[in-house]
Picture 1: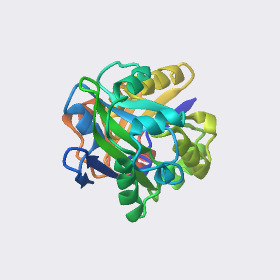
Picture 2: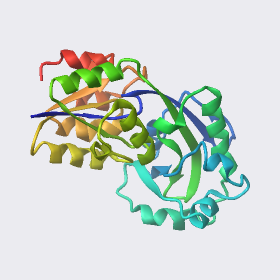
Picture 3: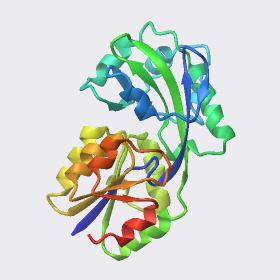
Length: 262
């Protein structure tokens, strides 16, 4: 029995990310959210669990992010952080934070303008400095499924592989993806941070030989835990040495995993 666990953003989909620096007001698309979190050990990437294209974009722009989340009972999760931090503390930290919903809306529009789909990616969120309680960046990510993905999934199924997705992306967006590539929704694990991905792989190893396929620092523990860890560089990001060192195999295209002797 064999299983493949895929990351989503940058692995199954070509990702476009818009990040707004709250201090400067500048929106960048050439920086990685994981790298920004790693630049400061007190930072955490928080994903808002609601649809950017229908909910956040239509919210009152002048309300603070705290007001939007608390008054509408919006759920959220910590997608990535080097700290072991309880998400229940997030609302207390940002209670008096002045960053507005409009700062997220700016990034949503930037992604939509590039014609990327926010339904199949991480959606929207922010990078919070847990020490200062300040929101340093707002973020929205959209995606386009790599053209080879459906072919790869079809072939893996033919070979009787069980297919899973474990990603830091918004849970609902991954359900959309599961429907698109025709895998059971129960095989999808959303807003999974590094440790959660590792736990998923470890649990699956009780019943399967497991291949983990990912592309970033959020996948390191899962790549190391898997029977074989595959780093894909199709997103064309430059992986750090610690990500490269965690992988057993590096591929340039998702279809290349079909050639791995596993």
